[in-house]
Image (cartoon, rainbow, N blue to C red; front, side, top):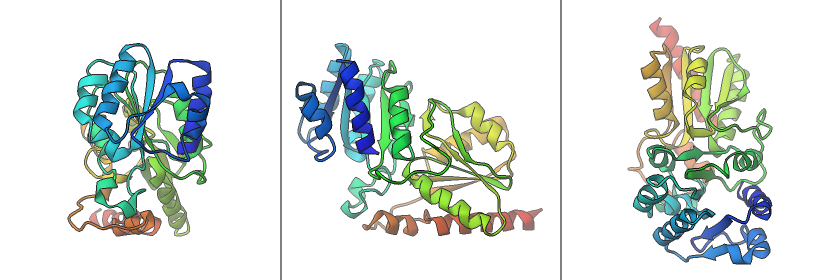
Length: 311
């Protein structure tokens, strides 16, 4: 996604001189298209993410549209107070690009696993939170949101090839995308983990289970009305996220079900605890935390059986 995103940013920068790019000393082999075309609008601030947000805040206050780029845990957690007190409280157009959501930096260890980024950004009022599921949607999301008046967080993956079936790059701010229709249950997901969720529906289809798949690519502004309308049609919903089960899509959907009094059982699939901390590939960690396609399909089957028994 990151290359598609940066190439689109180059297009936007060619049209609007306000667009700037800052990095925390990374992004090599990815950011060069922007650096080479706009060297005077690129700033490497070094390993100083708090300063990077401070600089971006000042630039936004001066009328620019700065994009800041780093690994998700570094882009958000190190400078979190600066984000809150700067772009959020002053409603400034700072765009934070958090790279490698979930376990994409799996071999680097828990310090690089972005498992709370959607939760901490969703807490901040007026901050748009966008998590594209493939590189085509990443481009569409940037085109639809780059010029918003307030701050934006983009959760980007490193996968430059996978295309989510049925998505075709569609994105609309504050709207979910239904990429597969079904009748037995609904899976709600976002980001790169959507490929595992979709693969799980193929397994379920082979067993005669019809699954609807909904991408919640915008967590803020939350598509509350649309999601409520979808959830009302199903007895069972699964949220699937490479994130803690608290704070992200699981929490958003729980809130909607509770507040709208929707008779839908919810199963939150994500990371409950990291007490048994592991390091390994993204695929290995998805299996460990039951986020692989096989594990998700098993959870659906178990919960459907449980529902039949409890009738």
